[in-house]
Length: 290
Image (cartoon, rainbow, N blue to C red; front, top):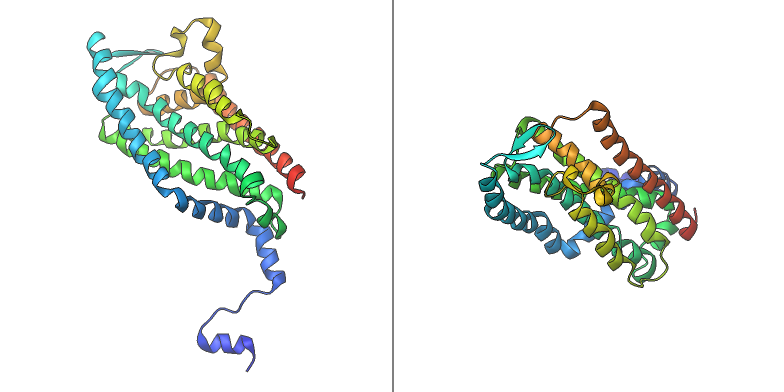
């Protein structure tokens, strides 16, 4: 009895030949690497849980029970959100907090994680020695990042609903997608930058202090962007956080803005994400080979 017949009798699937395994890897390489990328998250699953659940609770209690109470009281319970919209302050900041959560996750997963793959744990070299190409590693990383962003933003959105921070639930769930797009628009260029670094000499700390934090503070997160002086308003204009937040506010409570501006928000985020993805593939290929 041949090996194939034995497997058929026992109801087992015949093992793939090396050629078949290689063909599957070339076809589904990004999915395989994304699975590996997500499985490794079990090593720091507690951190993922705290990020997805604990962080929104802290921010929403701080905004909904603390700052929002003061702002709403001082504005007769109707915060002027700009663009002709008047909503509660919590409803105004909710889309920004959701987009910020995506930005923070992207910053976490596209700095030290990428450096580790090249330098400390060298986890990119094993898969790259298989039929998986360096470009597929980037694709798998981006796919895995998208799944984690979906988990984080989905959990965050549930808390927003529970806190009454959503204007129109029928369309507000689209904030999840705009936040994910904002996270990719920020994270994929950062991934390319991280892949270009040979040694950690404080670059990632600089990114947190001089890029992530200013974007968080000056992207219309806590107040309309047009209330800022022009000398710093440009930070919001170039910030993926502001563009993702404005899209989220449109889906949540329907801010009024020109159609062309809405198109600019979406196009800007897509361009950043695609440019970062292409640049990351090029840098990965240069460091790992085709």
